[in-house]
Length: 244
Image 1 (cartoon, rainbow, N blue to C red):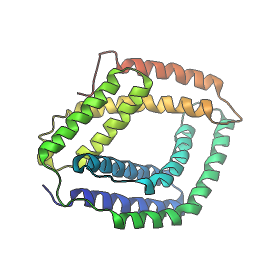
Image 2: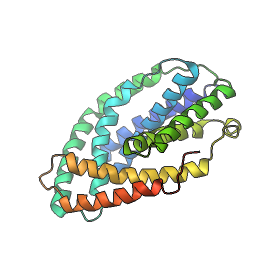
Image 3: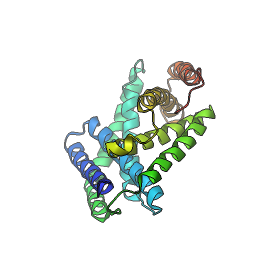
Image 4: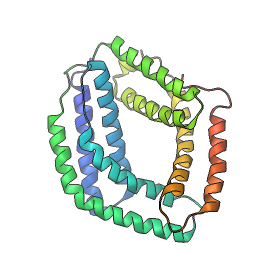
């Protein structure tokens, strides 16, 4: 097994988070929030993987605050980019985004120091576990994900999406030799993950617009989103699929 693989992957992702925070503090471009949140998701997935295969505790609490704060802004950015939103609502969301951006940018130096300190403390065993242990991990997690999918409810589908994304983050950093031995239909899962992701975007938009305090509540728009969400949800189970 390649030595220090997990350490280098996590360390590189943490450095990337620091880089995107620095860039965001200067230019405020949405892409930096998207990419730093992606980095955090990969780190969380690798820590969860390490906990399982090494039977040790690996905490990512140091990343929680920046993940939540950046997530609030990303939710608004995604909703604001939706078509057919009332103009007054877009203006309201933009004001809220600017307010949250200023709060985040104010705290960025603190977050960078926290992440830098966290990065220096990260340690893993030098070599990955035996390939049979890794294969067993994927079999167990895929079984759990399939159970969530087969429940055919929204809570289960949400959990399925998180589980599959986590598994694919781990799968993509493993050496090719190990990936070849894992029974995973990568192409099928990526297609299914995309469909579930599209459903989740619609579902999240409904949740956001329905329960956020907004002066301009877009009732008609929410109603159309609900119709779209039902179609997307039902289409996922039309052929009795699974994650395989």
